[in-house]
Image 1 (cartoon, one colour):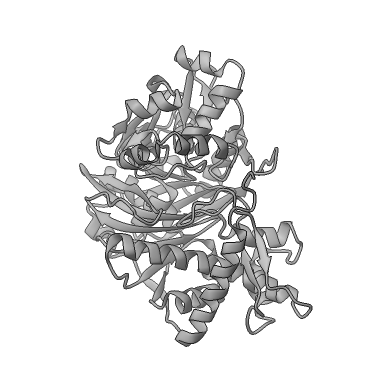
Image 2: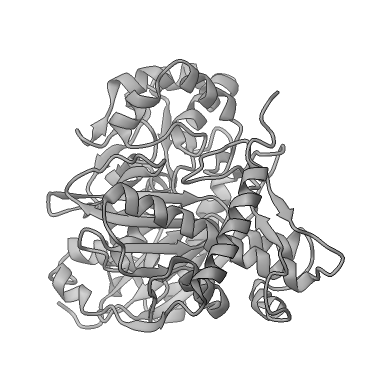
Length: 500
C-alpha cells in the first residue's frame, strides 16, 4: 500500500467536534477542533443542535486535512468515535432533525426511570442490556421525543423517521442519507440492545414504544460500512470504524487483555475494565457494556460512568469566573498546600457510578473564613479523582480482581497535580501514555484494521508508549482522612432534589 496514506479520525465529543489525521506510526499528522453550543432549556435539561454538530464536524474535517497538508486521495479510511447515549431523531426524506438532540447528561426523563423501577423492570433491563435504569441512556430520551414532539409517533410508526446516536447521525450525513448504521458499542448504550444476542430486543422496543424500523442496522466496530458521498470530499473515502468514545479510548489504550483498565478524563470520567469474551454483570451499580467487536469476536467491559469530570473545571471558568482558561486551574490550586478541609461534590446532573443517584446535586462542603479560591480549585480537581476512586473500588469487587495499573487519557491528564492525587488515592500506578488522544486513536486503529492499513492488533500495540507513571506519595492515614471527608460530603449531596 502507498506509504503516504493516512487515517482520519472523527472525534465528536460533548463540548467540541474534532478531527485528527494519524500516520502509520499512530502519530498525529494534523488536528482541528471546534467547540459548539451547549443548550440548557430548563434546569437539568441539556441539548445540542444536530445540524451544528454536523457542520462543526465537517469544518474540522477539512481543517485537519489542511493541517496535515493532504487531500482525500491520501486517506485510507475514516474512523468515527462519538459522545454516547445522546439521542437524535431526523426525517428520512429531508434529513432534518425533528428537534434538538437530547444529550447524555440530560435528566428530563428521571421521573419515567423511577416509574420503570417501580414497575419492576430493573432486573429484566439489567439482564438484557447490562445497564441500570437511568435517564443517562438513550431509550427514555427517544420515548420522550415520541411522546412530546407533535407528530413524532405517527411519523415513526410510518417509517418516516430515523433514530440514532451521534455516530449514526454523522454517517447518515457523510453518506448523504445512504447509510443508517451504528456499531455494537453504541447500540449497547441505548437500553434497547440485548448484549447477549447482539441485536435490538423486541421486548425492550415494545416497552419503550420504539419501532425497530427507525433504528440503525448494528454492525461490528471494524468493517467497511460504505463510503463518503460525492461532494463531501474530493473523492470517496471508506468509512470503516465506529466505537463510542470510551470504548475507542479503551482500544486506543491497548487495554486488550482481561483485567486491564483505563480512565478517560473528559467532560465526564469513564473507567472501563476489559472482561474478555464474558459479560460480567455488576453487583455494585457499574454497567456491563460491549467494548468492541473485531474479527467476529465480541469483547465486553465493566464501566463506571462519572457525569462531571473536566466539566467541573469549565464551571469554575464559566460559572464562577475563578479562571479565564481551563489550563489555569492547576496554577490556582497550587496556591494552597491542601484542600483546607473543603470537599466539592460536582453532582450538577446527579451522581453516576457507583451511586446512580439522579436526585443528588452539587455541593461544596467544609467552608470556613480561611477558604480561598485556591482551595475551591483544588477541591474541584480532587473531586474528579475521588469519583474515580469510588469506581475503581466497585470494579475490583465486581471483577474479583486486584487492579495493578490505571492507564489514563483525556484532556485533564496533562494536569500533573490531578494525576499525582489520583495515584495517592487509589494506591496503584497511574500511567499516562505519550499519545493522550487515545479516543481518536482507537477509532483510527479500528478503521485502519478494517482496510488493511495496519495488519494486526499486535502491530498497533507496539505503538503504545509511556510518558509518565505516577506512584502513591502520601501516608495511608492521610489517604484515609481524605476519603472519609469525601464520603461524608457525598452522603449530604445525595437525594437533594428527591421529591418529598
